[in-house]
Image (cartoon, helix red, strand yellow):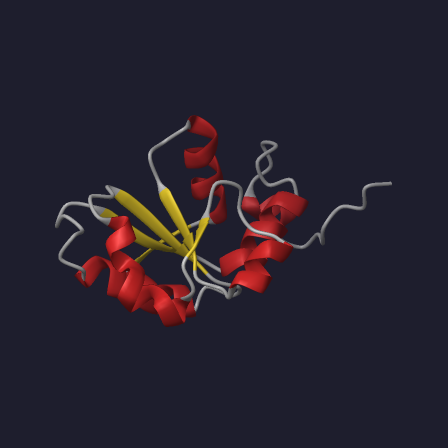
Length: 125
């Protein structure tokens, strides 16, 4: 089973400057339209042939639109011999949809998840 990381946890890691490789498995055109800052694009169809790009990574988070395909990608990455057994390989729970929702809902402004669960994204005006 693959571990998952929440958008909030990933955001905090990235903000802290942690050494984490975020791998967006969408096709290049989708990646170019928008992606998590600092992420790298390795499309799922190319991952088996390009997984060596992750040699020696200590923490890898795979990302897809809804958090389903990234679970399979994380399984592939974690089975790769270039990834140490004690490396963390996780899938972004809920995918980019959850990432965008979490940022739009202001979930890292001190509110709890329960306080924002029934509210939609806040209007900028």
